[in-house]
Image (tube, rainbow over the protein chains, first blue to last red):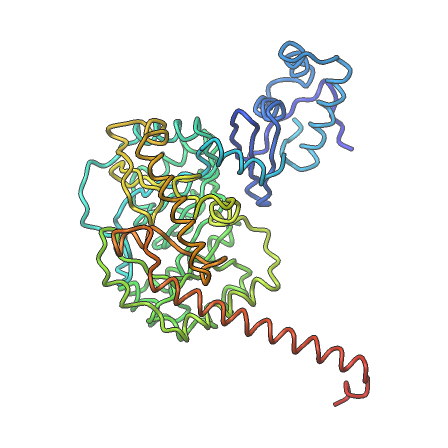
Length: 93
Length: 369
């Protein structure tokens, strides 16, 4: 399990290219030729992984933008980021 | 949401998934069957315009960008265009002859462009044939060096094999070469007229025997395919539902060096010019909507020709050859029949192997024979 917590800083892997539309997003990883799809909220978060913000900053932004319980949002966000990390879509700085 | 679902959304909402830029019509090679008509004239797109096109393409949803030509790397803006595309997060594919790509160029390509893959035209694995086709002495050794250096730099290659009357005797050797290097190969038998409709390239169409040999190789590769490779053609063609004959103008668009926008490289029905209108304006124009109707009718027309079920019918070829994209042209019927025969033979072969296996299992002694 990746050691990703609220203080972690993540950056999109340089092999990943992506795009987004209203209904979601699409990404391709050049080194493995994998394709990944995202729902609208997931692609918004993925786009914010620029290697500058901490996970807790992302969580704050999510709580401002969406009507979700903090605990639920935190759990889902960490799960999503760990999944991205396991798929080597993001690097942990 | 899975990939199929998102492609379906792209189709329904008419988002652009894949953009192709013909960066130049120039090419060092002189392949006699090439569709590329080099004498065309126009106002060449500049870097600023390419920037606008790529930004608008992204706003329309594009992920994939194919740079082609002519030979796209002959455009002096090549690396600058790639830089803009990478900054915008495009997944770049390059279609090239790979000529004169020395080690430094390939290193730069890896570092600055990092393309998803390079589609390299493979004409032969024999020097004489290769250079007879390209018309350039030394191009064979040059090609081999490029392949070697791309592999060293870990840049994914896919061979594009244009089967023709000059290389049809070498099909097996070409496929063996690709298998040995574990490089995906995509062969195509259909030679198309030139961009402006001249039909002389068709004189180089391979014989039915040559076409049969190529599809035998293709089907044998696909049987034990272990590549995890996304072909852009697969993305554009196979993921579409029953509505359209292909992804041209539905998910993808082609822009030539002068800013003319076409549905695809083969279907050269001009839908607008980027010097006059923006990409989004053309993509959502009446001309485009009218074009999409033709694409749908072409699908209906194809359905009626039963031999073409699951086979290629290119309205673009019909458009350039017969001035009518709905004409079911003889070449696609001929190729479809050959492919069907190859598949039928493969099926019989498998059936025979299966029966033999059952017979041997029932009577183990026969294994010794």
